[in-house]
Amino acid sequence: MTNKQKFPYLLGSKWTAKQTTWGWRHFQVINRRDRGQWVFAEMVASCDPNVRFWINAKQLKDKSLWQAGWQTLAEMNQLEEIEDI
Image 1 (tube, rainbow, N blue to C red):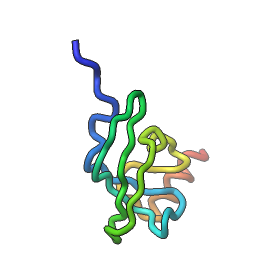
Image 2: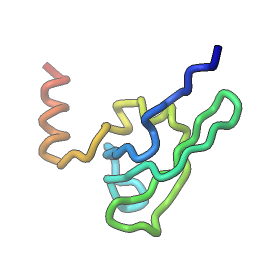
Image 3: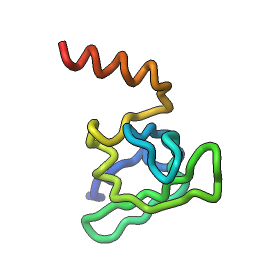
Image 4: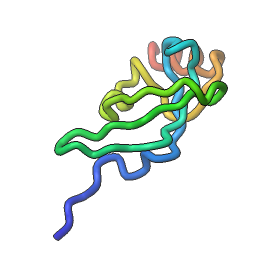
């Protein structure tokens, strides 16, 4: 029996940072690395391909830091208002 891959849809996924990160908010996963129990994602800014960094993929699940997909500020604020209700 093969082990289930953690974060199977990670590669190519798009993310919006809740706070400006390296000067940008919109990122895409361009690479992944499995290191034992850890999975890392290489993120690249959508507007500046020179901005790249590695992140523990588990952090992408933290909704206080990241949102799946590319969200506008208005969409992010609307989602926060709904979550506060």
